[in-house]
Image 1 (spheres, one colour):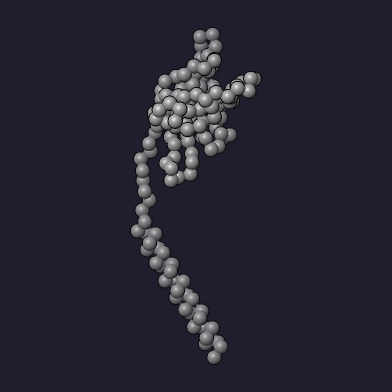
Image 2 (tube, one colour):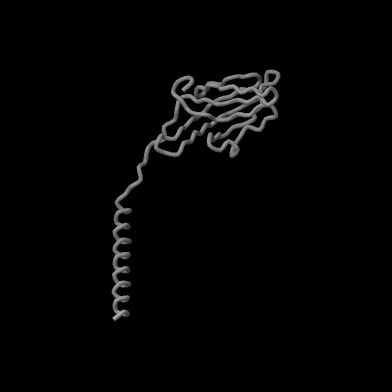
Amino acid sequence: MKLSNLFFKTLFFILCFGFSVVLAENIIKDVKPVEEPLVFASSGNVQLLNKNTAKVEKIFLQLKKPLVINNLQITLHKCWQAPEYQRPETKMLLEVAEIYQETTKPLFFGWLFASSPSISSLEHPIYDLVALNCSKKQND
């Protein structure tokens, strides 16, 4: 009697589990990922740290407009910020050059990530550059 009871319980479990797997597969097939176009901002804010003086400066950058600060020329090429329903992230495509005696020496061209500044960063003996956020107007 106990053996048949165990058999029916096992059979019931296998049928329920199998049914739930088939049901889940059908639900997953019907779900389609939402594809949103990437929306890039027209400006962004970065933080510039002078390692010699320990002064931090918040800088507003406009798209494709080079900004000269001290002897650095910083140009923002693209700025993307994650939508509010996603994990917070800001990505900036920046070009940084050093101006020395009327010539420019390229220092950095690449993406800066606000959440992980160490992945890709400006390597300069005096300055550190950190991406803060993207914005549509100054000081957002």
